[in-house]
Structure formats: C-alpha cells, structure tokens
Image (cartoon, rainbow, N blue to C red; front, side):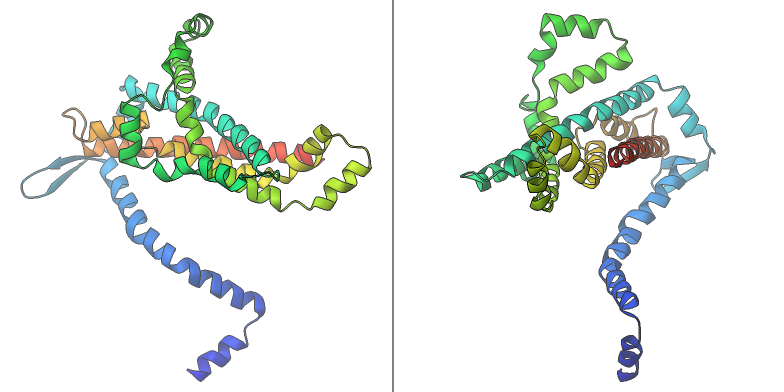
Length: 295
C-alpha cells in the first residue's frame, strides 16, 4: 500500500489531476458502456436484420441495408417528418437562444425579488416530465393555434411548400412549448454574465462607449462559449423530447405490421445521423461567428 502511495506521489501534478479526473469520470463511463453503448450496438445489429419475435425468442434475418433504403426512399411520411424536424429545430434554436439571453440579461440586473423570477423561469424545467408535458399537450396548454388563423399569417403559410409550411406552422403554434425549454440556457447565460470582469464595462464607459456598443463588443463575444453550449443542449433536448413527431412515428412503427423492430431501429439511426448533422452545422456556424466577432 505504501509502495503504491509513494509511486502516486512521484507523479507530476498534471498526471495526478488527470488521474483524479478519470476517477470522477469512471462511474459515468461505466454506466454509458453498460446502459447506452451496448443497447446502441444491439440496435445497430437489429437495423441490419428483419426482426421477428417468436415464442422461443427473437429471430434475425440479415437484410443488409434494406431497412435504411426503405426508410429513405419508400417511406414518404418518415422523410417528410425528418425534413420537418430539421427545419423546426433550426428555427427553434435561435428563438430559445435569443429568449434565454434576453432573460439572463434581465436577471443579471440587481432588483428586488430577483430570486423569485429565477425560480419562475426555471420552474418549467422541473415540471416538464414525460407524463406532465403529455397531459398539458393534450389539453392544449402548450400551443397557441390562433396565431396560424390570423389572415396575414394564414396567407403567408399558404404560399409556402408543405416542407416549409408545416414546420413554420408548428413553430408558430408551439412557441410556448419551445420557450419552456429555456430554463437551463438562462442559467448558463446568467453564470457566464456574472463571470465577466466589471472593470471592462467601466473602462468602456469611461471611453465613451454606449450601452449598445458595450453589448456588441464586450457582452456578446464573452457569451460565445455559453452560446455554443446552449445551442448543443437545445438541439439535443428538442431531439429527444417525448412529444417529438419523429420519435412518435418511430415508436409506432416498432409495433406496426408493416414496420417492426428492425425497421424502427434503422429509422432511429437515420434520425441520430440527422441530429448529428444539425449539431455539426450549428457548431460550424457558431465557430465562424465567434471568429468573426474576435477580429
């Protein structure tokens, strides 16, 4: 025991810190390998087979990429839902980020009952569990359908192709639900705002910078990392939301006569790749925006 302790003591500070970090991450890595990675590999195997559940167990018939080609080329409903998901996400993410940033700037100002307002804005994150949000959605509490019935909005939507009209109508009628996903993002922005050195603002004010110039030149560039984290978090949250129409369709196909576990597994992997593509697009866009802002 003493020999191991002395060997550990001879390690450099960086090596000891790395070992401590790996030690804290080890439970998560073990849980990921056991509860996520193994089911993921099994789902990939199912996606390459025609899966039949029998009395004696599960029977697999290898069909190569047939489930993937069927989902992409012979299932128009899935493709339409996938395109709609991409458009809805690309529209919803900026809405959530802008709303979260505005509320965080508001909560960063010293005023009475600031803690109460923080609780109010974070409360939806606590209550929007699966059964609760499903019940609220069924009662219409998460939508504002009257917006799409406004004559000007209805005429505008009617002129769009269905691939754009359906996602835009969804965003307009469900913006209440979208804003419910802003609680964590508000806290991240608020924490980033509180880390900005106040002397920078004082120096800018002494130099005659206006509040608008201070926001664009100091505050917004300082929130670049928080914006990146919030964008990734928002995409992932919206993508695995229980009321997501793509997830509902995949779930229904799992038990459909014309579907099956193998076909649903293939659609799930296509959906995962679409989500990864959206993450890459948003990441590259924000990286270019951060580089331009730093010049």
